[in-house]
Length: 108
Image 1: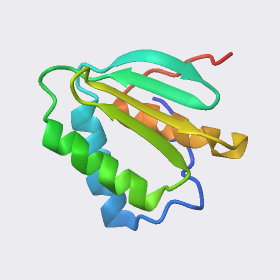
Image 2 (image 1 turned 180 degrees about the vertical axis):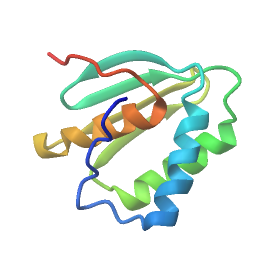
Image 3 (image 1 turned 60 degrees about the vertical axis):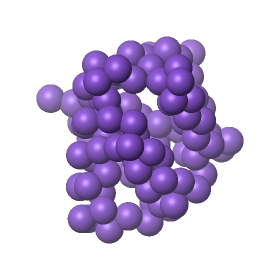
């Protein structure tokens, strides 16, 4: 079983909000494809069956609770990316990958 990455202290979601967001990530992760993973960037392609309204809500919540993320969503390409400017926020990308059900990736 994979260990749950630690959420950054700057995440403002309470326990209920974290559960709801985790559910949105789990739904978005069904059939997700990893496009790029580096210490400061995570780019994904979401499956056609993923509900776009659910993704929009996931992004809105993430922008509100974790403003250190730069999030890019290209709905027409179904590409979603998260990046961080500061290295200490890199583990938050691991938490997103985990929430999406991605296997750990060795980063270069």
